[in-house]
Image 1 (tube, rainbow, N blue to C red):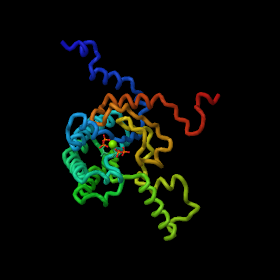
Image 2 (cartoon, rainbow, N blue to C red):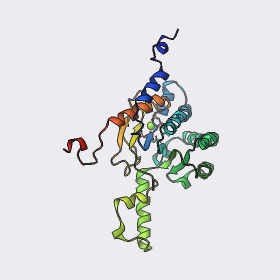
Image 3 (cartoon, rainbow, N blue to C red):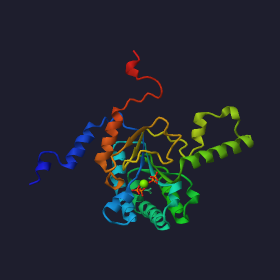
Image 4 (tube, rainbow, N blue to C red):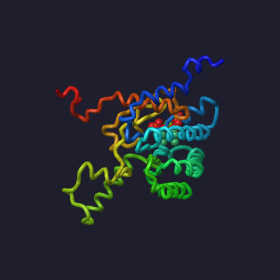
Length: 264
Ligand code: IPE
Ligand code: IPE
Ligand code: MG
């Protein structure tokens, strides 16, 4: 007899309980995730790092489903950084093929759920079959109106800012833009995330307390949520996402001002 389940303590009933607790009127519009810990997950099981990445991709399904269910507008996933090229060739190749495989396999289901795929980063700098698959997924889902999944791949925030500066300077020199038009919001328009609202909630798994060159400009007022180091990305599930959202819902966002309730 499964006494835990009978007493309502099973993990699915716990998930349902957390789901009910979430305030559906205060869902973060944009959630960004640094999916970290695939390597450690594999190491703990004496498996190759590639297996950890594969398991990490598996974890994505329920996270995307939950975001669709909660009507989140944007989910941004850090899949490969500009610094990840430092990794062994074999691991890089495995990551690239996994992305191709994932997009190929999951596209029909994502499309059915109204998901719109977008990419952040230097797509031209990817192996050509990876770039092709990413472009295909974007084209295929471009008219969808549901959750937008932004895949950050070959993405680095500093490279993104440098690219923005270059394009701004070019536009100024080409007389398409004047210096007086420059503003904080205009800079946003030159980033890969142009048109996408800043993230409300940024989650990083595996206990690492850093941003690792992710969305540095955009995350100026984002609520950060770091999981315990024992919680590695392949183990991150619906329940953990709901916990992060519940924590977000407790935060008071002040943007440099004062809490409205303290304002008198
Ligand atoms: C995150 O997992 C996935 C990518 C960076 C692509 P890691 O591969 O960084 O896992 P750890 O940090 O080594 O455990
Ligand atoms: C950040 O994780 C990049 C991705 C999750 C894709 P890393 O594992 O590369 O970051 P560091 O090296 O620990 O800072
Ligand atoms: Mg890592």
